[in-house]
Amino acid sequence: MVDIARDPAILKRKRLRQAAYGVAALIVIAAISVALARMEPAAPTVDRATLLTDRVQRGPFVRDVRGIGTLVPEDTRWLPAATDGRVEQIRLQPGATVGPDTVILELSNPQVEQEVINARLALQSAQAALENLRVQLQNDLLTQEAQVASAESEFTQARLEAEANDALAKEQLVSELLRRQSQLRADALKTRYDIEVKRLTTARETLEARTRVQQATVDQARAVARLQESRLAALKVRPGFAGVLQQVPVEVGQRVAPGQNLARVADPSRLKAELRIAETQARDVEVGQLARIDTRNGVVPGRVSRKDPAATNGTVTVDVALEGPLPRGAVPDLSVDGTIELERLDDVLFVGRPAFGQEESTITLFKVAPDTGIAERVQVRVGRSSVNRIQIASGLDVGDEVVLSDMSQWDAVDRVRLR
Image (cartoon, rainbow, N blue to C red):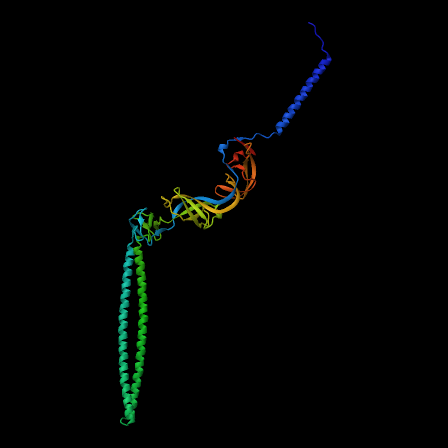
């Protein structure tokens, strides 16, 4: 076998061709790498059916807040014990209809019963002393009147005798000494008569003063007797108004102290809604605002009647006075939902309230492109909010579709594809 020598020119051209291919391959690889480096990462795909979206609208905007609560009677009274005692009998159980004088339960207290007897006896004694004083003073007054009458009679007789002796003395039929003696006697009896009249006046004034003193004693005894009688009557617990008995938190044989609650009675025909509003939403709630109470068997209109000045466990208690007829089944302690209307705005840009985002702040939302189905993150300035809507201050226009659902799992990307 014979080896044939290759032409060096051919070998040279082959090496040049291989080098050119290598350079071209390197250029293509570099171009591809640059293109891949400049490309954005592919947008993740999200199922549209799992998202809540809404379109931006312009029109009237009603701001409202919502809270849950219960129906409570407007007129509810706890009946406390007026005195200490022992529960002898519970006549009625919760749910019973009661009137003002219905006896709900009875207490016993021997000391109160004895104090009533003592007070009655003290009143009778004071009244008897008053009558006795009046009789005594009347007798003294009659005696003094008799003294005045006697003094007046003696004075009149002496005056007549002095006038007669004066006339006889002028005719010199009696002596001057006798005339003067009769005149002196008449003057003395006149003085005595005047004194007796003054004593009669003083006796009458004394009678009234001493009577008033004893009358005050009688009034005091009567007040004590009434107080004791009221304590005795309070041993039979009565509501004082018509309603329904709700609670009797005591048992037969139990000892109760003054002021301890014995029963609770409410008027079921007059109910109000007691709502609990989140403290972050309750700052704009004011007395007189319109409200709607959903009893789950009908909606009743109402107005805010009271707002608690302090928050408890993150909520503020708001009372709503109901202004419409109550639906069937509306009873005390029924759970309800309430919506309070804060204000109405005529021409406002708004959209459904997103899962996250406080009012008067800047938030990010995914805005959906209508032709590509790509949702891109945008900055949106929001204004005042309602229960399920929020005002758009800037960042969106009418007709824009945005995602309202929680998109926190896509915080690392600015675009998602909706399928």
